[in-house]
Image (tube, rainbow, N blue to C red; front, top):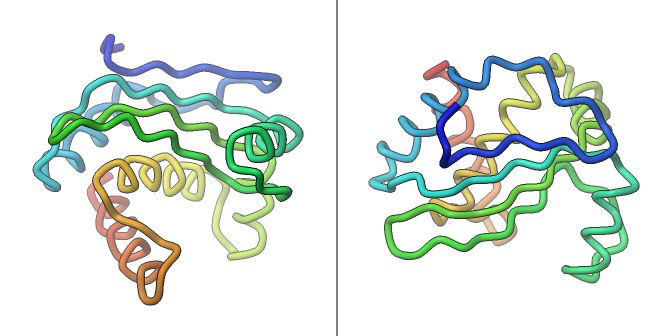
Length: 139
């Protein structure tokens, strides 16, 4: 695995993913957004941990699938991304998707945030979903 990527687990098992393929995919998505991948750390966790992080750093008292800490400088993407595998599973069931597809969507969602794509304002969620779908089509 490339040094610029870290895949960690906190309170959960590391998901059974092809990490080399994921890293190549992330590099390609970043390139398509005119970005260079620096150090990216993914921390897979459970709902209690994501809630703790959400409360501590964002003062949000709810579960979420991903929290992205953005340390990007110019074109160089850098960040830490906490992903709750519990919420990913719940969301996959809610939207009728399979777990692994939803997990990959969330993994690239964090990268797209680092690329400057937001999803909180009017119309932004649809733009994010479009970018997610385009990225998933590359897999």
